[in-house]
Structure formats: C-alpha cells, structure tokens
Length: 89
Image (tube, rainbow, N blue to C red; front, side, top):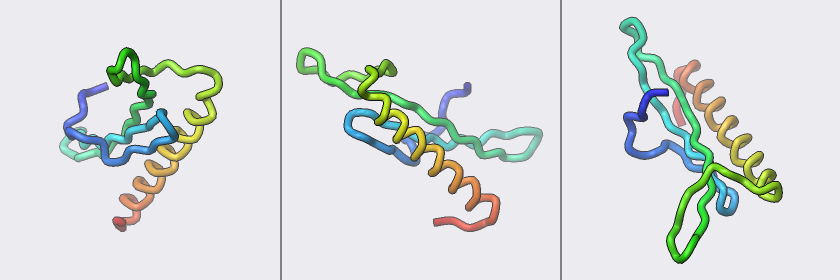
C-alpha cells in the first residue's frame, strides 16, 4: 500500500475508544486519476498516563470494531456512488 498523500483522514468514525479513519488517495493510473479509499482501524488506550494506539482488540471490543468497520464501509460506498453519479454532499 502506498503512503497517504493527505495529512488527515476525510472521515473518522468512533465507538468509544475504537475508531476507523477513512483516507482518500488519488492515484495516476495510465494517465487517469483513480480515487482509492483505505481505512485504518485502531484502539486508543492510556498506559502510565500516556495515550497510545493499538490494532489489537479484546473479545468484548469486537462489537465496537464491527460497528466502526460497517460504518466506514457504508461511508466509502456512498462516496463512491456520489462520485460515480457526479453528485457531492
């Protein structure tokens, strides 16, 4: 995967300490700009007074993980549909 060109995600979806960040990347493919989306899933936690991120989840956190991934998928699907039809929100 290529490094993101944007400095910030276009959307962050949170459920408690679990988040899905959606990134938009424009790639030149044979002279045509192609839009690709990617998602970063992580959990924030505090350890010894310092905030940290991880991509490991306990079983009881899986419902939050499921929720943020479903919402990220929904957001990306709607964005792609808007772009395909030429509309923008």
